[in-house]
Amino acid sequence: MATLEAPVRPRTIAHQGPFINEAFFDFRHEENARKMRAAIERVRGQLGREYDLIIGGKRVKTADKIRSLNPSRPSEIVGTHQKAGKEHVEPAINAALKAFESWKYTSIEERTGLLFRVGDLLRQRKMDFMAWLVFEVSKNWGEADADISETIDFCEFYAREALRLAKAEAPVQLPGEHDSLKYIPLGVGAVIPPWNFPCAIMAGMTMASIVSGNTVILKPSSDSPTIAAKFVELLEEAGIPEGVVNFCPGSGAAFGDAIVSHPKTRYIAFTGSREVGLHINKSAATQAPGQLWIKRTILEMGGKDAIIVDADSDIDSAVEGVAQAAFGFQGQKCSACSRAIVDERVYDKFLDMLKARVEKITVGDPAENTNMGAVINEGSMKTILGYIEQGKKDGRVITGGERATEAGEGYYIRPTVIADIPPKSKLEQEEIFGPVLAVIKSRGFDQALEIANDTEFGLTGAVYTKSQDKIDRAIRDFHVGNLYINRKCTGAMVGAHPFGGFNMSGTDSKSGGPDYLYLFTQAKSIGEKI
Ligand code: NAD
Image 1 (cartoon, rainbow, N blue to C red):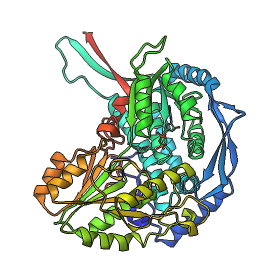
Image 2: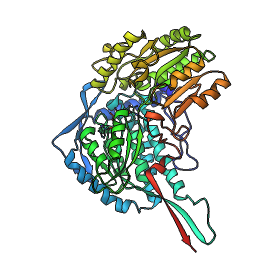
Image 3: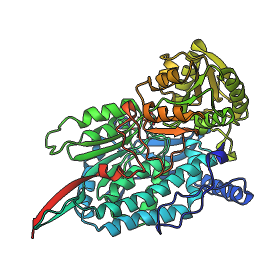
Image 4: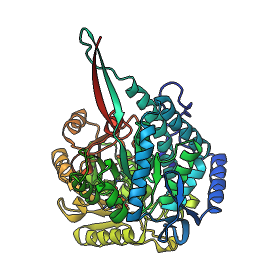
């Protein structure tokens, strides 16, 4: 699946001319595969190292540690990290506040220059960064490439966007006045990413913050702190001043919660589950003693994404799109297809073809570039297997339905397709975040749209049909932040598909789009009499 996820694009010429997405590697070329294997071996030799908290540029050790494990071989430690606790909240906030006093006045050329340099460094070490993702979160080569390419895109795109915002003008000039509009930074931000795009989302929220002049406390997920540590090393190499990014792995419920509720935190950039997002929203809405502002929250949350397969569609491409979107990175994408809603006239044919396609998916250690690696951790594996058991009661298992124990000691689950799942059932409504696809039969396009829209989420969706009328209806009525027609619902590209969802999928913050940096700034309007 990796190569199919990754169309080949021309290579970017760094920050010259218009923005172009970073090209993916084509691993059918032996030279690329050989280089990736070498990168994996280089990184294998660095597993198990210890990383420090970085607060105001100083390395800090703690008694408590976080051990990041390889989901494909849980006995293998990818990195050992210090664990920030409540006692690190004040030092981290103070370091970020102090750095803000100078960083907010740093020229736009200097701030964007930092992002361009980081993008350049990442390009030079791309395969090594990809290899860290293979070990830390069990991404295969193509998925790891997509994650690091997106990280490079965010560096390039947000730097260009910051340059554009710096040239913003007041839409009207009154006679006798010089009227201007300046997008100034907010202050200290808490950046709280998930583990599933552990480089791209972590770096995207961090880079958008700092290019806008803010300073941050970065608390990576405890499942993926090592790739974040590597990224922060890169920031230091590119010359980031002390205190602009304070690196603090720690427990979400203890350290994360405390930085969210701190009165000096100006905004929270979060990506993760609906439950935690709502909790942060509530906490941020409460004014703490000494708090001067309404905290801004940028919350990107879960999904229950559907692909509608119309009777009048190219079934081959629908099957391919559903298989890739459901099982790419083990279904652990907020954009993953977890529901296929299929017209009754093509339902049986679709299921036969999908079963044949899914049974070709290889499961095993992604260091060998299998199609599917392991799911992130033991807790997640148990939750996913619980959903599968529920699915066996509510529907009919077409393929999969169990652990893939022959693949090794890792948290491997077979790609699972469960048909005849009724609308409104648990499997049809709740985000599973694993390699489980529910297939639902519809009586036609109207009912398919109704079922697709009938969850509390609204992140991504896709429609396969040859009918222009149905395409128009989907554009009007399929209520998702990211809609795709006759293609899969994963694989959003920076700039082309600004990303963010409706309803309980988040605040529709559209990362990688032209509105994103507005969320990290506030506009100061100046009317000067001349
Ligand atoms: P999660 O909500 O469990 O954790 C996300 C982050 O929040 C982690 O860093 C965690 O440590 C932290 N956290 C946990 N409790 C906290 C608290 N009380 N206060 C502050 N921080 C806290 O999510 P996850 O398992 O890491 O990621 C998977 C989820 O992310 C899925 O629901 C997925 O759909 C969603 N996601 C959404 C998008 C999007 O763009 N909409 C993208 C990727 C992932």
